[in-house]
Amino acid sequence: MDAFTALAEPTRRNIIELLAARGQLPAGAIYHKFKISPQAVSQHLKILRDTKLVRVEKRAQQRLYQVNPATIHEVEDWAKQITRQWEKRFERLDSVLKELNKKETKHGRKPRK
Amino acid sequence: MGENRENSIVIERVFDAPLEKVWQAWTDPEMIKKWWGPEGFTAPSIKVDLRIGGKYVYAMRGPADSQWDKVMYSAGVYQEIVPNEKIVTTDYLSDEHGNRVSPSEYGMSNDLPNDHTATVKFEDAGEGKTKLSIIYAAPETEEQYQAMLKSGMTEGWKSALGKLARSLN
Image 1 (spheres, chains in turn green, orange):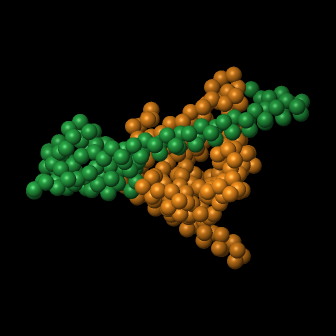
Image 2 (cartoon, one colour; image 1 turned 90 degrees about the vertical axis):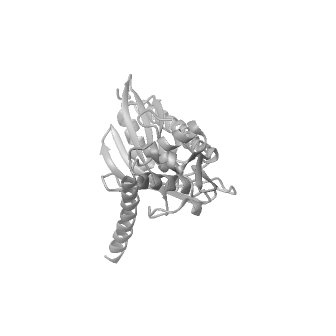
Image 3 (tube, rainbow over the protein chains, first blue to last red; image 1 turned 90 degrees about the horizontal axis):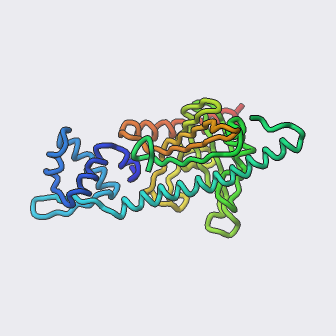
């Protein structure tokens, strides 16, 4: 799974928001914040780790979770890139449509409403 | 980022052309060739099978001697088609037959998304203008994600097998 897809799931987004607000949290504290089972939360944490959206630090018996801003930025950059790509396509589509309009006028047909 | 959902990308633009013309430019392969791909890129082949379950395969090629001087394909399966109104497709990087490939094959990062649903909306904006919106959304649940992976791959195989069957006829 990629980071964008991982972020689409509401529980995982809530975990990220929680960590963003609180900084570092042990897994146990994250489990307590959610009504779903610790196993289910644990699955979400695994996906967040795998997609590098969170980082884990082991301290004594605890696993401390925190947001990995680098990946969040990467997702933002990707979204910007997609947007730019489409904006460029739209510019070309715009000129294609204008040309189409011109041709129709030239051939004596009125452009349709 | 989005208006409908938090995890979506929405891109909008109003075109100075009537709805049917924009629909045509969007679905007619000869028209798509003229605008698909960034500046300096060409679209050597555009295939459109405009029916639900049908597939599109768009090729683009970068400028000569640039790092993009190779044919790259993207493809998707039509999931919803409402003429002059809406098109919903999956969207992913593919090979020439429209089978999904991993982004690394095109020198891109595998950490970035290669599976999403794209919704294209066509709206009459009055005075012969048309508003076009593209909405990119990631699947929201694991089930949807798995289903999307599976559907794209199955379609890819179906298409490859169909081709084989036709060549044997």
